[in-house]
Image (tube, rainbow, N blue to C red; front, side, top):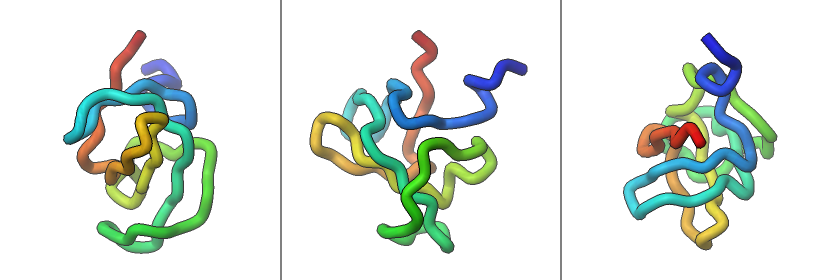
Length: 71
């Protein structure tokens, strides 16, 4: 499996509840559903439920609501 499928990174293009966008910032939270956490540049896919991301379109999304777009 390629690294792209194992990690979610700042700069990845994703599909969320409110449309598509590029990840601008990410925070890894202690608990699922938390809104704030530790700023990170990438996370393993198995930790996506604990991530909150800011997209370049000025929206935020929880990691559980994201899908990868492999371009």
